[in-house]
Amino acid sequence: MSRRRARIAAGILDRWAGNADVLRLSIRSKLPSGAAERRLADDVQGLVADGIGGQEWARRLMDLLLYPLSGTAWRLEHDVTGLTEVWELSGRYPMVFLPAHRSYADSLLLDRILRSAGLPRTYRLAGDNLSFWPLGALGRRAGTIFIKRDFGRDPTYHFAVRAYLAHLLEQCAHLEWYPEAGRTRTGRLRRIRPGLLRILVNAFHDARIDDLYLVPVSITYDVLPEARTLVDEDRGGPKRPEGLSWMLRYYRANRVARGGTARLVFGEPLSLRQQLAFAGDAGDWAAVETITHELAHQLAGATPLTVESALTLVLAEGERGPQSLRQISRALEPLLAFAANRRIPVAGKDRVRGPRGLQTVLDRLVRAGVLTEVEGNFQPGYRIGAEQHHIAAYYRYSGSHWLIMRAIAELALLAAEDAVDPGARAIRLRDLLKHVFVLPEPVEYAEVVGREVADLVRARRPEDPISASLGNQAFLLAPRLLGPVLEAYHRVAVWLRDTPDPLRDRRRWSCTEVFAGIDMSTVHWPESVSRELCRAALAAAAAAGLMESEPDAAQARSAFADELAALLDQLVHLARSDTVPGLLRGLDERL
Image 1 (cartoon, rainbow, N blue to C red):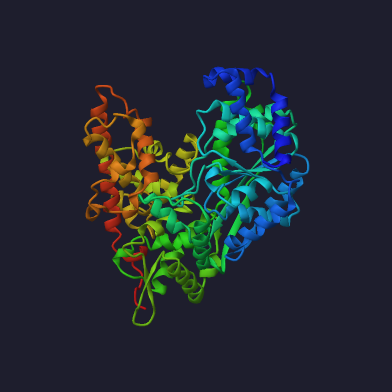
Image 2: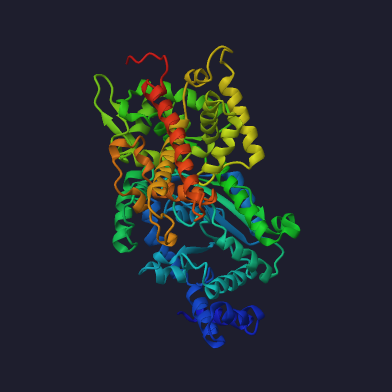
């Protein structure tokens, strides 16, 4: 440990010596008081970084070492208005930057933008899996805080993090961490984890500062080479440990992205003091729940729909044959028109206005392994190959938060054919899907679904069946966005129903058990074989009380499986009724 880090750690420990909270640690950790204090000292010393005012040579060496991982791959675009607002607040209050996590390059790109605006470097909280040599030694000297990935049940470590964050806030330092607790493996925005935010609230009270601001940050990539590794892990593959060989592989993989674009957008900064005041008598934990909800929606609003997401969406039924440039362009038009009508931000739409630009984007997706190119008589064709469903779904779902309400409305509308109120079906779907997607609060959710259902049935003649409303649409979203999710849910529901004593030793559950013995020839959406979707399905089952050992639980699990089987059948029917490849209905398919 450097002398600077040792002095900082000693100062933190001296401040808390004899504090009642420290004295209670021995009780909570079930250790003698002396042992608890020694563990606290070890934990604080393990956390402390040299700081932004620390060793300049280490920061420069870190920049030199890490720049090739991101600086040579993407052009960087950013939100000037949001950055200006951040700059105006940064001189008066500590800032906590909270990006949605897609890539190991996220932090490097954010650092470039902040420094270009003259903002100080952040103290970056990173998982201790990245503390390998030489990043660990250099990182601590350059202001990186390596933190345990899971410490929720360790009261001593919990208090050490709180004490160190309070120290940093008193110095008006800016912080950065990833509130989703890991990179997305599916392309979707993940749920915000409240653990560190709860510690931050305690540290804020300890620091006795006027305020601090939470800044949601969205970073999107038109091509992300590491997505292939992420989806391999999500479908059941092992996670390779980080190290020097990993850095070399990462650099080589990122060469595919050269010439691409990364976009950084800042959400509206949230005043922590104001959020706590809004919570009032409900307390700090209620405030944290409100903050996590607001952050999730801010991140969704700041994350655009990319043209790559739109293209993989219209090609989602790629097994039906390759699509020509003209077919893809015609299929893309109604989707982009829908986005314009809903004021959905579409990143890169100017790049696909002409056939040459569209082909350039498609060729980049081919080089990234997302699509397959097939030779045609006059033009190349493009499709999602048999082994590309997972990686294509990653891109497709990166913009799904803008389109998911339309997909829910489509599936809810089919309930009318079963004499079920579409509104009631939509509410049930929210209970299921809130574990996967960022959805509005119940009142707003019902209003949005109602508007989408009304839009779907607007052109239907009174004598036509409800299904005609969907058959007349220029595109359908439910099979492409909900199909893989509900197929994964159904697989878990069947496993819960058919496995003897599935509740035994829940803590050892593994989605590997659910995946075992899957016959891929019976799978409608290969991308439904997903660890994240499996965990979401288990969470939905637990929320419905299906993990209990009550006598009625077995019957409830069987009903849950039947419900999902019915939903899945409707989605499969919708997918099969979409008989024209690429969502082309009644359009000329000649080249």
